[in-house]
Length: 320
Ligand code: C5P
Image (cartoon, rainbow, N blue to C red):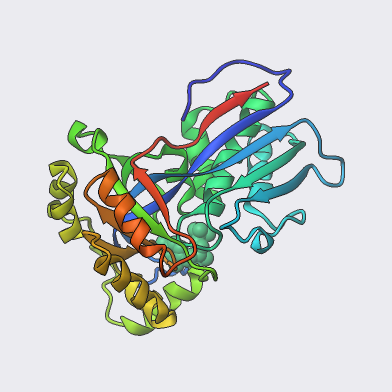
């Protein structure tokens, strides 16, 4: 989270929020509340949505939301009507925390693919919390923002923090890695989004069908994954990338098998489905290698992006 500057009379606050990928994701049997216990390594990568909040809204519609999207993003898939988007919910929960209704016009500039396994909706919710906090000079303590974020969704606390972090519980309990070797590393990723999104609940439900014997407890991030992160060696990290949701995602979307094969044939160290998919991410050794792999993949896929990670979590980029 960015440093706080006191201002109550601001006219516009723009906050940037990164996409996340999961370098490791172990999923257990569903809990009584329907959520799955998981152990994950999150990484924030350099693909961003920008959320701008200005004074606005009305009595009936406290938060008026609109959106523009990059060419590679299907903006029409994002619900904007009051009460349909996590942005509205973020404003409600933050307002309830302060015992007031928060009004604003909120504009989202989307560069993170929708329903892609990259936590784009969660990123917007996290950015909204920070943007409205600054716009209304609420000075909400970071711990309170994290607690509200956890209520909003499993990935939202990580979107606030960014970096490289462990996630447990249903993913909402996050702990950034402190080892400088992990903090200071730069990993190069080639990102291949999919034209059509995948529903996260559907992928989790399919996971349960394919793995009825999944353990209810004891999902952890193995030490070898943390050691590989600290090694800063892409070959070692490539060996430990793992995602329990990849099998159900590939079973629902067999075309993704071709994407993963194409990325590895293009020379990537390793390809993996991000979160619940369908975005595939490919680990590369450095900037030149990532550009080469991306160029080869562009022969077959319309949208191929290059991003580094880790990057910072939500941060203010503009205040006018
Ligand atoms: O937490 P969030 O609302 O983002 O989760 C979206 C959906 O993903 C949940 O409704 C649930 O179906 C599934 N989910 C899950 N276990 C988790 C996280 C998400 O089953 N740990």
